[in-house]
Image (tube, rainbow, N blue to C red):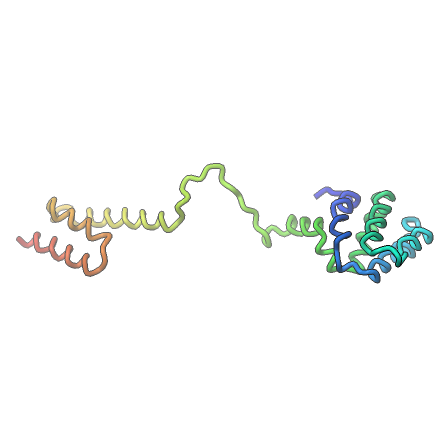
Length: 180
């Protein structure tokens, strides 16, 4: 993949700001995690500012993400770690995580290879139908080459595409001409 955590956070920011599962309590947990374990990333003063309940949660999340992006790669990585620890279902539904999962698991979502030129777009049933007609004609020619005359041969060929009763009549007729 090659994306840094900073680039991933930029890509995931719009999703995180709109995510309804990130309620006030979960955002506070994330802020406290970053503040207590990594005070170099989020100081007490900054944590207090981001925990202000007078500001809507989506605005607080947006400001926090902007602040973390300004702090650098390490801060973004620790945010992802805290998100994974506290809100796992949101973490796994991030656009970058979904892309990474699809990239690493080719059996779950097989890649579709598009042909540059489509040779036949009629499908396998058409192929089987044409193939069976060719095989039927070859068998008919092979087994009736010496016996069938010109008129009877045409009737034998015509029997290929008809229903069972009609085939029986035409084949009976061609057999009658052999006996004469």
